Image 1 (cartoon, helix red, strand yellow):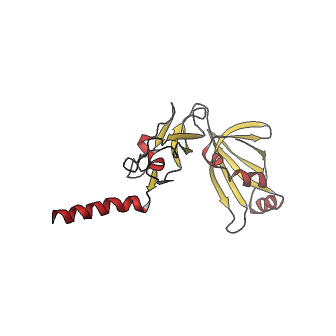
Image 2: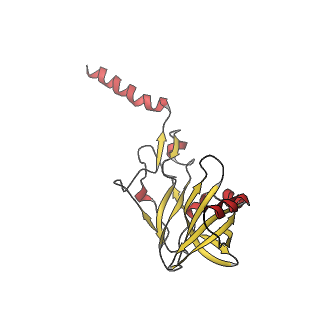
Image 3: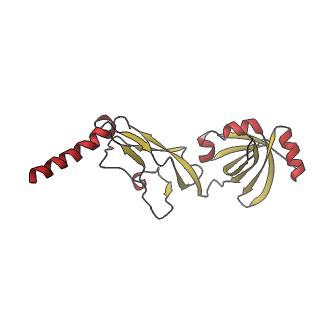
Length: 205
């Protein structure tokens, strides 16, 4: 995904305010052993790009005055009540250095799974993106997760996700294998085992 920017020399609160009034958003580019570079970006284009998932999870091609630079989005500041971007930070990415970034999970074959096709369940994703470590060239836009064998009795965890070659999924927190999806069965399907158990109990009496 590509975005165009222009180098800026002026800095300070007043300069940033004037920049926003003119329809631009101030920002910086840092990292890769280089000096911090101040930039300005056309606001509306940036605002709409921020609504796309890949803008937050992918390595971007940032064109600054005709020079392309690989970057990842590191921070964005919004106005507290107006639809306005106040400032944006990008980090340079070296081609040979592995960097951590967010990648979306794309669930496939859900409707064909026994959980839906046979058990009439409803599947809700609990994890929609993961942190990965990879070089820019190896970082995928998304990772596919095949749910064709999903059942209410066998729910996959994060460790079942197969990352592409050269990509490592990073699990944080105490739970290293969180559940990927939730399955809700029809009330009748849930009630049936309960009723059967109650019947067996009466027979024993």
